[in-house]
Length: 140
Length: 400
Ligand SMILES: [Zn+2]
Image (tube, rainbow over all chains, first blue to last red; front, side):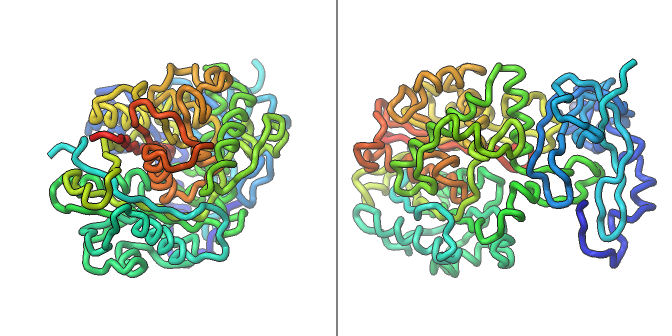
């Protein structure tokens, strides 16, 4: 786990700020009505075309693996191998993160179905930070 | 004033790249600058430099020093009476620093400018390196708590490499072949960090850093310094009878975040920079005799070759197998050894490529590794920065 210096002052990791933010756990992204680009986290200006008219867009928690790699040299605190993925979410938009609960990295391929689960992802100034990871979608 | 043909390179200098524990940042910088000044054909007085741009990526963090700004270079090089600006633009810092110096001359503001880059990356242990510690540090980025998890330079490119294999049919053997070629080139280059051959088997048997990339698919982190002096083309003959001219220069950007990208088999920053630089030069990729392209990882070289336009998407690996990109092939790519063998001291990398192209165009590298020149045109390229979202390209030619 990432361990930064112990907490001494209000920080972005403060639980209230973190939990109330709609981007983080509700997965609110943004969609541009001018070019249809979907991005996450939300932005006020479309990164694709520069439009100021972007609207909130609810991302889905399931999707398919667009690309992945099997990282045998992760940063300190993570046990290798870890599987980094970029997922095409159902309904549009992409999410980058880690696979969890994979017994065998060979189980993952481009196109593999995955779904998000909430997991502890790191420590920041002494606080646990939760976030989404992906696990293989169960059959049926 | 247009840029093409109006700006000349009159001198370059660098130090051999490597793991230079015995040299400080200042040592490296001063040696590269002295090599540059002392090797201008007809002599050069540093007081002729009217402005400088200082390429520096790590900001001194890797050498336990505060921020390295313009004032740092002024002190190190004894250039206290000119404006000096620091450039940080990811891995393209070196080529972008050169571009800024070129614009300084082309604008008419300054007759002579210095483009300088230096990086000390090996004073940190491997565990705190880019490979292990994540490209740009860990922790929270904006409101996306997960994306940085387990990140690092090799992850960024491995995510591309997997997709290249899926869409283009590339194999790990294709990637290994890039390392074989560039290590072979590095053996003959006196400035290269790694001067040993590798075989396909050795690459494929090296530890997996981040599947599908092995240790020998990755470039090293390197200490190094390199620089170039540019001036008004009509003043160049005062300094040398063999100036090299700037034909095109460009920087291209695109999305920073990996999940916004439209494709993982091409990089739009490179495509945009290449188009702009080639248009400025008024040439096609085929007119270029040799190129130094950004091979931070072996798969990246194949992608860049295609993105610059030296061949169609998906053809680079087959051409590599035929020897097309070899030093004695139809289109030599990375005759210096590339980042893979020559090393990657980030801000010095692009300027090191420019040194190599300057010497190749002036046919000064010695018979063994001199590439055949037809049009006398060479290209240098980097891509990198956040999510590989920035690219910079410079095209040099023997004729204006
Ligand atoms: Zn848009």
